[in-house]
Length: 434
Ligand SMILES: NC(=O)c1ccc[n+]([C@@H]2O[C@H](COP(=O)([O-])OP(=O)(O)OC[C@H]3O[C@@H](n4cnc5c(N)ncnc54)[C@H](O)[C@@H]3O)[C@@H](O)[C@H]2O)c1
Picture: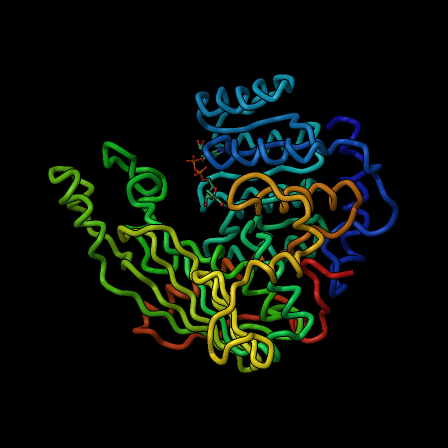
């Protein structure tokens, strides 16, 4: 372990027991260990498509340097080094192999790791990182099973090491502006939200483009019928509806349509491919309905294998009006000029632009850059990471919870309380307005 990591790691360990019982802690309290100008040393675990994208975005913050990268595939590591070379960054130490991430966390000169590997590796890698006193930023969904959700919360409570699910859509500028407006009461009392991840990924993510061969995501469609990718939808909704601070998910029900699109995809494109003959559990479209403790409702759609253009379909409704992302419009009773007619959202977006959104860059409409900036600032200043682990874990839990409900014929499932009652008294945590 080299010099810059030692103070942070031992400091985290020393304070872990103190931190476990406190309601709002997610980062290292006390004195600042980094000056604003000191670059955060990052390790990247998983130098695939997303990992390399994150590399570029985090480098663009100007506040980081990568010191180590890890993958099971030498070609992916080479591509990671290329991103660095293209950015005039020095070559970094490579860790190659299935468990090489442990070595990276144990010995590399890193303050934090970014994890961008397949879904089933997210929790083991985040947990190992927390136990090693290395801050973790993990791709979505941070957990795939309920046991993993609890393991993350318990490890964080025991170690006090900051850990965040990198849910980028929470940070998109329009979503943050809506959050500002909700907090200023423009929509009244919030009652309902609708959100979706409708993204046709069958031909490039689950299966290889051009061949139909298996990629790592495909096995999940064979083994499970659930909302496989539940966090992009809920990211902004959680903050809009005060989930984990003042309200909490009480119960959910989930229903899935039959699996059809995967088979037709293979019939159309690769009629003789053995992947077209496999039995898939995963239904085409999963609809989850959440009821919150304070009587709000949320509809969450999962839809990643039907042929269609990309869509999030965010809508949020309050007693004074609503916002609709697809229309880029809103309606506010007594404010919008025409009775029951949509009003353009862009002028409101400008007027209520969140402080964080003043610097936005990178993928997903600039959301990635806003997230990276806030993550880096938090690490540099020993402040809580911008999105709490409670939020990350609850969003991810919709995956396994939806599977339980579907397998029980849409039975209602009680949502466990990862905050252990703290949701009732926690104050706004995400994107505070100061
Ligand atoms: N937030 C977003 O907008 C967004 C976008 C795309 C992907 N993602 C997430 O990013 C993750 C990666 O997706 P991707 O599209 O980059 O996939 P990918 O297949 O391109 O990359 C995954 C990488 O992980 C590597 N890997 C596998 N096992 C490993 C191990 N034991 N140790 C180290 N590396 C290992 C693979 O070799 C590969 O290079 C997924 O969890 C996905 O959900 C998020």
